[in-house]
Image 1: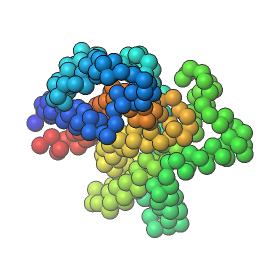
Image 2: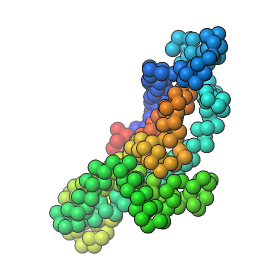
Image 3: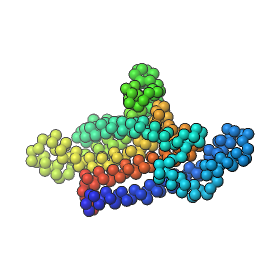
Image 4: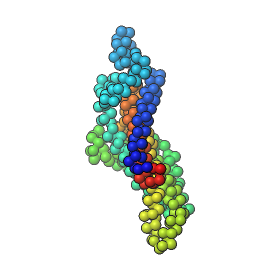
Length: 316
């Protein structure tokens, strides 16, 4: 099968997956025990039943759930994600303003994980069963075990309160302001630590397995320098599994961003999602969850394509 056909088949599979994500998201939100109408009525107890019925009809909550879903998905298809009930602002405007900080945080965490994991994994594999390998495995296990919120609080304690190098909360400036980019280091390290530890273990295992194969023995027998054997031959084959895992770790980075953004007061989608859940802002919850689902589906699609490019056998 050609690479083009392989990619086309994966793209066609994205359509039913996204449909399933939208159905599940909409169903779970509407199964929650509370709704924005209850909060509106609680904030205005003197509201008459006629006024309450008018608001219910205005937002379509008097329709069956499947009709509400059809209306919602039809609006989403044309770029209309509804509005925030409390303020009446379009949900799309609110979300588009929050997406860049979340993407910046995710990219920083992802790059941090790769920069730490790949060299450390190579070193641990080359020094297998020696002191450096044992230390790296202990560090990796610690990185996977430490909760994001605790690590974030410790970084704030050390970096902001003890060393005084960072502010305690995010500066109220634009994303590309140097102060904001400097503050990004702390939440970026927090969100990338677990991913780097996990990828380092994958890199180390993959490298160690490749170094025991016959082609490595043949390369050494030909007199190739050990550096060339490791970096040119072993590393390329080891990166197949690491690249796939790195792409799939996007899910963990996106999920972790909810906690990290709250801890660091980072103005991204995670913090907005928490606020929306507390306020029962259904439209905000739906659009953030749908965006996250789309991002994960795209990440999996990229992983499949990269896997097929690195290892042509997967196409068959």
